[in-house]
Image (tube, rainbow, N blue to C red; front, top):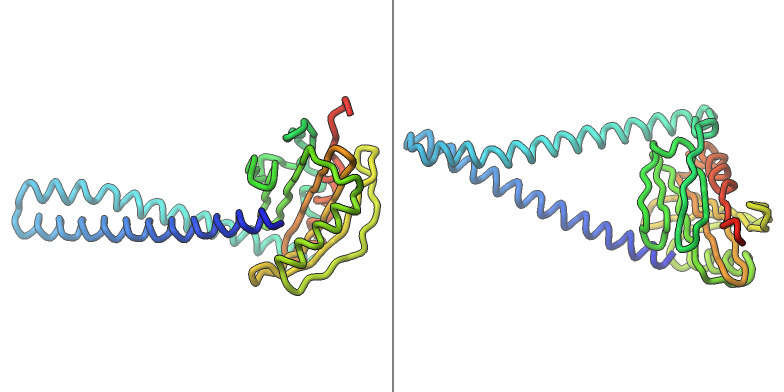
Length: 244
């Protein structure tokens, strides 16, 4: 969780810097276009006319990108509001019946299946996650390591310690055993406020003497009951390499 928080902070800083650079470039292009257009109209100079036409190209591209981003944001907002409305009506997620697609991971060749995989955004090698999957406002991250801490209980204690150190207003459910790929895992739920945002998690944890696997799934509390069965479906599909 410490590495994840650091990565998310760096990503947010990068986003802010990117927005500032974009706005500066947009203002510069707009100013150049206006100056060239005014000069072209007042002087009728061929050079200024060409300059106005050339400076209009990046400005039009930036406007097109802005409109595209606005449309994407509107679509995401619409999908989120539709998801929340369906959750409040108690409707199950269509992911519960969607076809599963098997994907593999690192640093050892595990397998895990994802329903309607093409509808998810899968960021590979997104530290600390090997797979980081996003579907609307539901997220699943897989952390696999060739380092063991002997028992799932040790991983549980470590994960809960990280939550207490990096969030506020947190609470944990009791952990209980779950069998995945014929091995004993632990699972528990957690609710926490991270940077002012309320999040509800479900953890699936495994460790032996040589390997540790953490499958973290989370979403907004209002959507949790809708996506929890989907999280279970994904986690229970996990398979270790057949040679082990």
